[in-house]
Length: 285
Image (cartoon, rainbow, N blue to C red; front, side, top):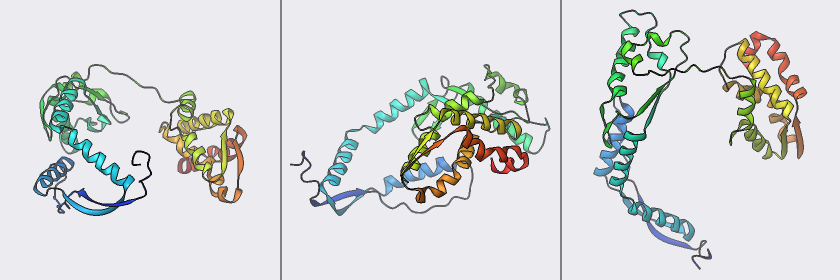
């Protein structure tokens, strides 16, 4: 009966393990706060062990809780930690985004420039290979792959300290996204924006259909706005789509069941006036 689910609606009383309430702690420091909070939680988790509480549950829900507790008991966390550390050391990848923010822009010897150079020099031993202390033990960074990226609008890669440049010997210049890439971004990903809007309109009983020429027109207009104002890449697509479907989104509850097709002409009707007014498009698109 249990396997067949015939007991799922029956109520049972069982002891459910719950974590002890952690004490509230505020630390007046902004350095390493995430790591400090994690360490404090681990420490207090050992001081205040988990305790049980009697609860009335349906058999189906109780079975899931018991199964999860049994699975946790089967896991050797020490073994998991050792394996994780090994995988990190041998096949780990660390991505440093916006590294241009720590590049010295004026070459001065005071103020923010000194701070930026200090951050670069702190990164040197880690990128080159060092042993770092973590909550799971010592981790060697000798074989970890480091990848850094930056826009470098206000500076150039050569503004980084020479030692850090030498630790990133391979440089690749990326080109701006264009119409073709925007079209693929709108259509190919599993959670593409078009699929999200189709599902959203489905909740209102509307079958939203994007014609291919309409998608091409959206990609073209997004690329055009990027060229005229500021190039923010694929993020522009979200704003463009929101503006195109703004009227439909507000009127959807009153339309009822209906099929709505987004064509190139509809896209132009919604966006052309805004795009032609460059000052207005800076605020709206």
